[in-house]
Image (tube, rainbow, N blue to C red; front, side):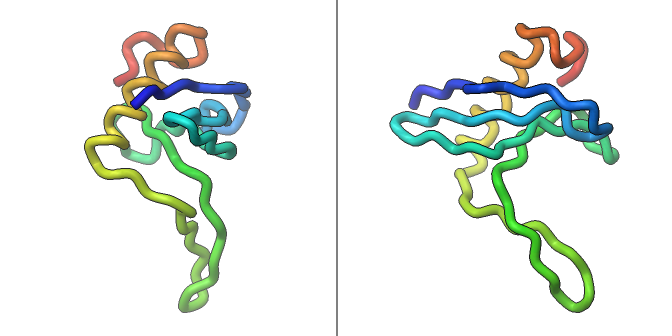
Length: 93
């Protein structure tokens, strides 16, 4: 499946490197985030989510899911593109 990063927008937020739309085959998903930090090893992709209140706590629930294998492929593609554009350090996983 073809994966492309569309409309990448860098940010100054500490854990959010940038926002983008993800083209996955014939589907475009806006509101994705490239994330770093919080004890994670490397960068990862956060899909669009909604905020909910559960037991007095705020949680974020994604609107859609990909299989673990597909999500790994998406992450590698997005991280490589962010490095290519200079938004993510080359040594970042």
